[in-house]
Image 1 (cartoon, rainbow, N blue to C red):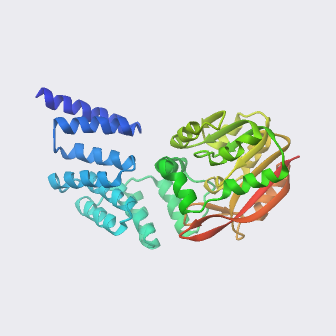
Image 2 (tube, rainbow, N blue to C red):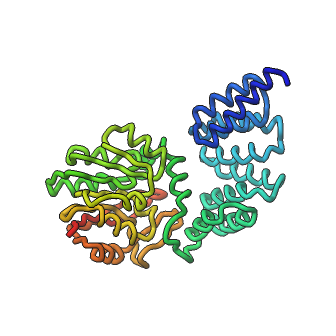
Image 3 (cartoon, one colour):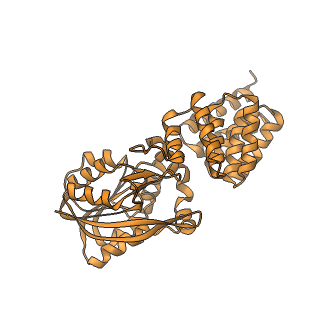
Length: 363
């Protein structure tokens, strides 16, 4: 083999390894080096485009994927990534056209059917989304994840919890732009409301835990009123951003309930802002929080509010909980309700989402 082509292959394989390991900056460097040595390779263009999409550079990704498709019009990988880029750039109908083109080439692509379902859901076609998800399952796509999507759309059943891969991938994907979007677009106020309630009590805390800490919005507000502050989050990208913020004494990457299993009863403050909407049934969470807290400690959190059942999974794929359910869990786990307030937790399609904010005290 030509030494230059062999070196291009080595860079390409290193890029694939980096991509699979979610080392996207390194993957970009390797694919770029491979492309410089072997210009125009559709597989390299496709992988570099997919990588830049992961890095949040949709326009650059789209240009590379279009170039790959000029060289190889039947490249279904390039079509799939092109559809994802178009969807992220706010062009769902163009994305749908790319997906249909891929499925015309190979109608058994589970990933393409999955993406079709998501685009149709975003376009308001619930029936089409469900049909696409069911077809994706028939072609080997993740049945647990897509079953969760179907349950959220149809509302016929409420799973006790989302699949772990859903929550982790959701926040890993949006970590870089998450805070700006949440605060500026969705008018997210949960950390401010919870922190204000704590401030009114005028109390300082010895050891606090921020459950589902995300990028650290709560940590910034709590830092001055706590001696020691821990954070825990399931998303590796969120954990990195929280650590970089410099307000936590320690941040752990873990499922919150799993993390709490190994925690001794030493926290006098536990906060969970906009977290339980991604947890579902809260029996285990409340029991573990109670076991991790000192008597007299404060447990404060927000939930999306509804009154129909204990919990429901909404079409947003977020859970909403009833006041009666929260009050029952509080009493069963040794908490007194110090205060409860109603506020919007965020906006969805510019419509305020009603929320309940609780401040509980451990007996």
